[in-house]
Image (tube, rainbow, N blue to C red; front, side):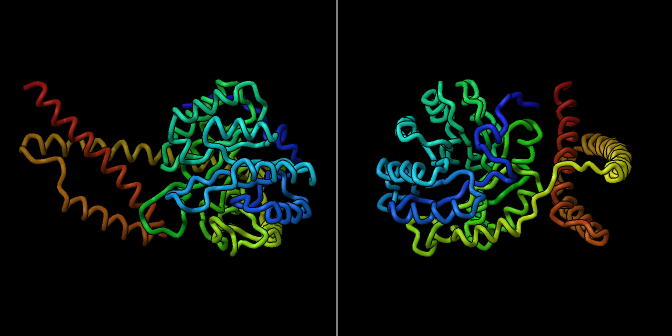
Amino acid sequence: MKVELNVNPIESWAKTKHKPLLIAGPCSAETPEQLFATAKLLKELGKVDVLRAGIWKPRTRPNSFEGSGEEGLKWLSDVKKELNIPIGTEVANPQHIELALKYDVDVLWVGARTTVSPFAVQEMADALQGTDKAVLVKNPTHPELGLWVGAFERFYRAGIRNLAAIHRGFSTIDKAKYRNVPTWVIPIELKRIAPQIPIICDPSHIGGKRDLIFEISQKAMDLGFDGLMIETHIDPDKAWSDADQQVTPARLGEILTELKVRDENSASRDFNDHLAELREKIDNIDRELLEILATRMAVVEKIGEYKRDNNVTTLQVSRWDEIMKNRSEMGKKLGLNDEFIQEVFKLVHEESIRKQTEIMKAVESKA
């Protein structure tokens, strides 16, 4: 599946000449003093393209700080005029959009909790129709690519051409290193099916801890992402929301200095020639892999027929456990990642069970 959305390149609305595009600022606009002090230091870095600040904070439970509302938009607008820097904030409904347009917010983004609702996204797309604002869409809270793509399509149908994605990770009930697990395969697949949509990484929300921000940012650069959104506060430990994941402007500067930004391609003829040789080897190996898989599935079909003829179930848990244990041990000896081996053989096993189930059904239908 390919998604054809002829969106504008990121440089046309961000007015940036460097990579990555950088959106930075506090999680929340708390006071005019806090916002201006942070913005001033970010401006002095000379690398921040858009000042971000949360105005409405969708908290999990009430009775906690839920944002400064319209008053915060006034502060944000004042900073824009004073420092001549584009501004951005999250919006969750048409009323937010109306106020954001009133205060000339340059970049609007849709949060993960909003992306999951096509009804909410459509209402926001309708509210933005006829504007030229940049609209960034965060991935939904759970890894469902269709919802993410659907949100872009709704804004695109409303005439919005300044579009980009924000990868902020996915919620999980499991204890993990990250606040939201990155599951990089999802944004990678978005990049494959809709290569024209720029992707910005939000390492603050993925990590949930400031000491993970560089690591996640570097991973995003290694994958060819177009930008970063990093929460930055003048005094993170005293922040009114998400204190653990915010960095100081000084630390942000260090992160950007340490970051290795890679090129998507190389002009070196030697590099490209050697890469082509290696890719040809990969193509040949993949062909062999496919032939081996086809041979394996032919044996699976014979096993399915034998089970059918002897009235035996398609699934034997003990055999499956034996396979997984054995293949893991074999993989480790070959220097392969155990998680990778587990995932590969889970898929192979699922297809084997599907084929054997089809064989069983074929007999039932004839009966």
